[in-house]
Length: 411
Ligand code: ADP
Ligand code: ASP
Ligand code: MG
Image (cartoon, rainbow, N blue to C red; front, top):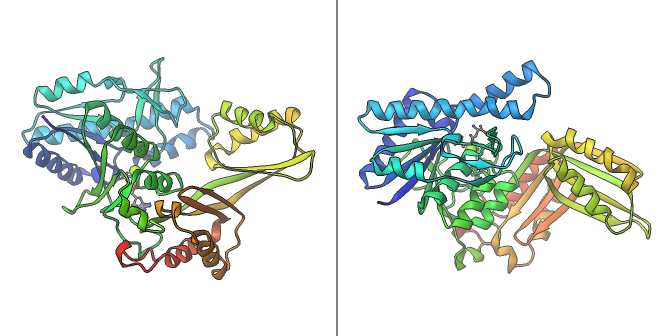
């Protein structure tokens, strides 16, 4: 029997009526002949509430306990969903991450999936049951509960799809698909019919919170088609899939904004082989995820090094940088917490020129100063003042006509 994975985000299971609605979506899939594996997130804003509860008691809560606490939100959703399905006459069983041995590494609050035991799920599906798995959580080798990072239920869902052999994973959410930019910020954003894994990965990594980046990686690696769609409307959403030639004709597919960032600069680092390796190995030891590294020689003997991190890693990064100082001998640090990245993404950049010029021109016209610029083969990012970031995003979106569907654009 064909298996499909359906994931319901927080707003899609926020209250009893929404849970019933999700249950009807699940039942529809069984009627189409699918065996259904469901992944659910914590209801509504519950994860935020749990985070607030933790900080009320402890300004720096131990990460292991944070995971133990946050995992409870998803457990409530899956059992309630199973009860709703039972009340509608359908056999369903819910599991926590540990019950299906969703094995992860031990990096609490941002763990990565290592393996999943699919047998328990197959056994239940074979008995005709709907299997509902708590998103966002796993266990490490020592049976500690871990979580995959905010938004991580998407990754649970796509990883499960790969593990059980489902070709498609449906992500039900509060928007009806992927837009050229976050429609809450750039109101005229246009919905896309499809987007490539590579573009979605860049967008998700650079702030498009609609998908967890690791989910997109799993989709690409294990060939799972991801369908992002509305949980409240019966419309087609956006398909995330492999690149097709026509995608290359589009210069820029989307634009993103990433706030909650900090930039750390180390000025006057000894310009000798091995120093960059020492610094980043030490940051990795402190589990700091680093982006957008820029190093420039300032003379034969010294170099300046800067990098961006998530603000939640700032304390750990400050400790790491201080500890490594005696080995790399930098003269000064500077830290900016009021910074945001605005990025444009498109596979068309590989074969077209002029994207950078257009982006910088749009920012200049909007009187937005660029702090630093980083690029990948299919992305250009500009770090800007956080309070100018939304204005910058709008200027860039309009310059690339991201208010129109791709086929109606002139560029
Ligand atoms: P869920 O709880 O269902 O996982 P999320 O809040 O994680 O939902 O993701 C959906 C939200 O992502 C949308 O409400 C939207 O504001 C935001 N978002 C950011 N970038 C985009 C984009 N490019 N397209 C669509 N939604 C986006
Ligand atoms: N409940 C978690 C969060 O709010 C995971 C998720 O929603 O995907 O981040
Ligand atoms: Mg989400």
